[in-house]
Amino acid sequence: MIILNANVITLDPKQPRAEAIAINDERIVAVGSNEAILGSKSIDTEVIDCRNKTVVPGLVDSHVHMLEFGFLLQELNLRNTKSIKEMQKNLHEHAKKNSELEWILGGRWDEEKYSEGRYPTRWDLDAIIPDKPVFLTRVCGHLAVVNSAAVKLARITRYTKVKGGIVDLDQATGEPNGILRDNAMDLVSKLLPKPDRETYKKACVLACQNAVKSGLTEVHWLVNSAEEVRVLQTMHSQGKLPLRIYLGIPVKMLDEVTYLGLVTGFGNGMLKIGFIKILADGSLGARTAALMKRYSDDPKKRGIMLYSQKRLRGFILKAHTSGLQVGVHAIGDRAIENVIQAIREALEKVPRKDHRHRIEHCSILNAELISEIKELGLIAAVQPHFVVSDTWTVDRVGPDRARWAYPFRTLIEKGIVVTSGSDCPVELINPLLGLWAAVNREDKPGESLTVEEALKTYTINAAHASFGESKKGTIEKGKYADLTILSEDITKIPRDKICDVSVDMVIVNGKITYSRRHN
Ligand SMILES: [Zn+2]
Image 1 (tube, protein in one colour):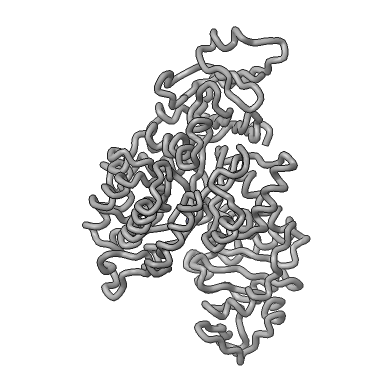
Image 2 (image 1 turned 90 degrees about the vertical axis):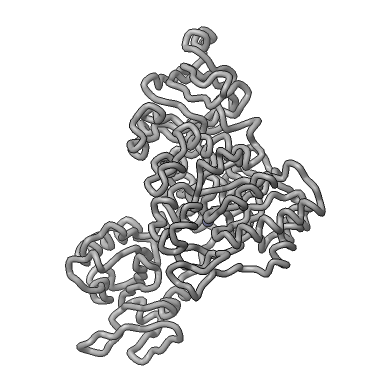
């Protein structure tokens, strides 16, 4: 048995605060005062003293692309570099640390921040890495710089022409200078070695480690390939999964999943089939999110639906009738409307009370859509930090519609289940950053959540969104011992300091999977 001694925020209305938690194997067996819990101590009880720390129910990220995150973690991140010189220095260190790599990949550099006042060139990279190919994308993703080894491998010359792309040439010599724009990047990127099982495994392990370190005890993991699922099953069977996983499976695999008769919840406590992920529209940033009216900053555009309504309806109906939950990416109000319509029709054909279908992102709403979401019992799976990052929302949709962008408080007051995630690697995985964003709404202070409400969107609401509220999401006797231990009481410190709180320990299924002292 383990007894954890701490300031406990239980989120259990019957006993909101406690001083100690007793854990036996994977379950919480008692929660209460120090006196009561420590009294039950026996000879083989381990006491973990966290008296000046705060324990909350294990934090859950409800929308995260873990494999992509894992790949990104292995690449060179140049986001904070201020000069080509610094880029070179980082490149050198990265290559030294990862000498086994055949390719050096990385990016997120921005020449506008560079003191040299120019783009880096292949020769800048050659000075550091002359022998193996280097491919470094710009922060926008529409441009890359490569070294001479990559230029040679891709057989790029001063005469190379690419449809929809440009190979930049050096002004003095007329030779390719290593800058590739748009489709010209494919000349090199198509040569990248296809990741094998080991590469997938490394990415999954790294992503999991980082997620746990950020305080997460569970992720709703959006998979893209069967290989990922295989790797996760291997990790689980070897007892190496450090957190719970609820799978979001792409609609391209819907036929296979239904063919096998798999339903939401198939699996076990650590790894199970969650929802079928369907993309309804694009993004606001790229003006591809489907709006009812035109974009305010580009009146020619209304965004795009990725499928016809008939196909969307078909996917949702098939998943729904097969016993699967759906999670439909819908950002624009027109996309959300169409998704609601399709789910309504599925429910009329095959009524099911506890379907828990989700709308991922659920960004641009209005009063009518919110009422329909409530009426159908849909879950809003939002990303609080988008509020901070999407600085162009008002430009895109104008002030009237922006009023209805991410209206967290309105959704909660309506009684809609709101669950939070990061959409990492779009945003950082850190759940405290999302929590901070949800309670400090500068765009619309009236839509801010209280700390406790925001915490619920990362715990009990996320448990509800994965059909697990009887086993997870609060600190109560009988539930899984999934706990996040924080350096501060987030309900007591100034709201704007929440993003500075650190994660001291993470317990998943009764086991310590991260401890700051030991890392
Ligand atoms: Zn996403």
